[in-house]
Length: 129
Image (cartoon, rainbow, N blue to C red):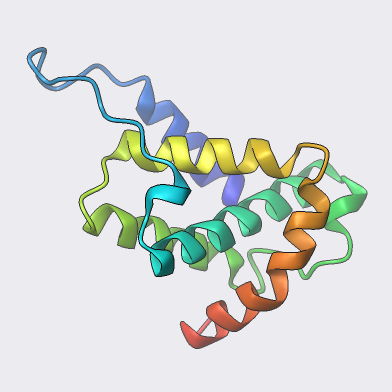
């Protein structure tokens, strides 16, 4: 599922810095990304959220196809890799994913994910998944 990948990304965040002289990473939000990247990131985070719900047995995840089997996990991985190719750092990616999942677990999160999924399914299908 997406959660092991997400957990690994969070674990990497705790890795020691490679160079002590590096300035702290600038915080980037989904809203600051170009439109196409932001849309893909929102969908990737929606799949991560659904995967989290499904793994936890949360009823909010029951109405969706299993994330790994349906290509949602692969979509998440590809989108995060594409974002890194744009110059975002690992810390930026982890922050974007963590804040997105946190938001999707908030009061309006279930509705937001449900509204995103038709477009996300089209995007995932267009990616060949």
